[in-house]
Length: 85
Image (cartoon, rainbow, N blue to C red; front, side, top):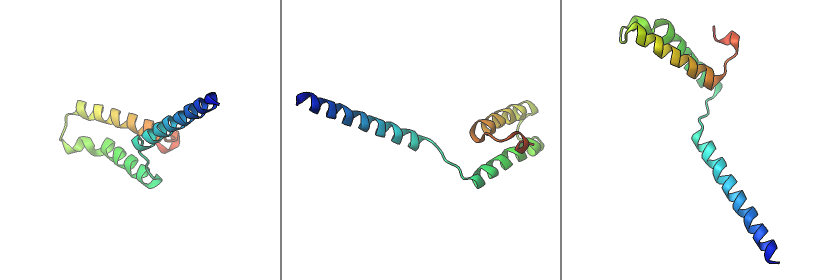
């Protein structure tokens, strides 16, 4: 009978730990609607095309920023090849 209580206690602890882990991952992640994703991609593309004309950074800095923005866009939104043009 004691073994049954130990098994139940271990299963309850496992369920609580899994629930806490799930809560942590859901809380940490960010969800964007399709409209928000399209807007973010639009802003990145506009900055890529016209950000250099603003003159607030050097050409090298602009190239680095655009490179990082492209990485973020590809990583977070996983766009199809035909949508990136």
